[in-house]
Length: 436
Image (cartoon, rainbow, N blue to C red; front, side, top):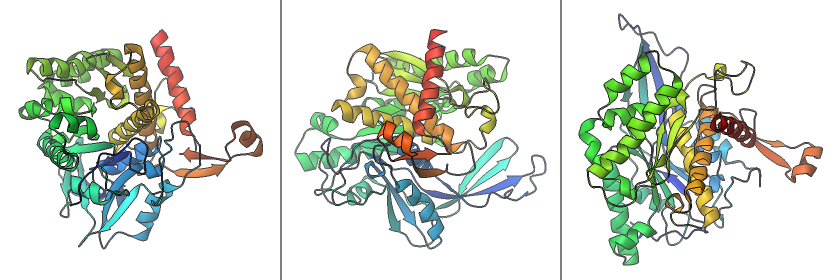
């Protein structure tokens, strides 16, 4: 494998890559009582995988050339699938202040790195029986490794992405970190302390099956190496041994405010307290507890935690774009949220040219950074839950008057709206929530 060089802040290097997978999802519904098969309810095959939805979320804030996802294509990878993905490679230059001006010399502006594999593309079946959901792979899965990101690098010498997303067990996350350290140390003749500062910033979401109390210590042992740690509220409760307590809170007649406060006090602060009790040294990462329709709780031990609501709400008229009546399918929402959140942090880090922007600066500046990242994550998630599958995406020519006013000849639209309009709407709601 080629040696790894640390990526400079401004280069043709990929800014954000994922080790998550691309999956062709199929569906099976069973009768809740008899378990008799009821077919797939017309869902057919949907494009899926945590890595895919993470990158779609990131695309709302980053130029496609700044993102990297490796997709292993099998004999069943129809050209229509590739076309559906490549539409997200289209750009409207300067469409948003959130776009990172990544260098593109010698690299086509695509966020996808397609590779041919033997046999079929990775497939899985999602089995639904009442409220219970099962998941099973139908084909052997091709696990992505650090070396795959290196081999897909557009630079010479090869570089890792400046930020890397991991969605796996704590044990595999540890192995990934060790592999990055070993290769960077060999490439730079650096010791471990230098390697930590030279290496990519790591974003970690644990897979649901690994979120059991027995894995808590392994999870805590990762935190001082992460930039972002983001389980959802059920995963966080399971890791901390609080699933029954959360079940009681969420199923009794408790208000959303009470539930959010419980998540903040017992889950977000709970991880910090367990880290300190376990003697975890060093700085802890940004912690974001993604909580579905409740929004998220985000922050760190250094600056505290705050709540940011979800984009969709029942508190507006059904005709409003943010009405919860527009929610169709929440598959991939959490992954897309984390992609949008991370991409916002990537942009902020590039603007500040700061090696560790999440752990520097004044308290209020850091809280603002966290809040903006969560708002962008919520907007990214909103786009993937308004339909089955991926959101619509287009580059639309601006009317002459608007083009003269903004200096932009075209804008990117998602589900018929601009990212900026949704962000502004949610910023206003968050400001009103803070003033209440």
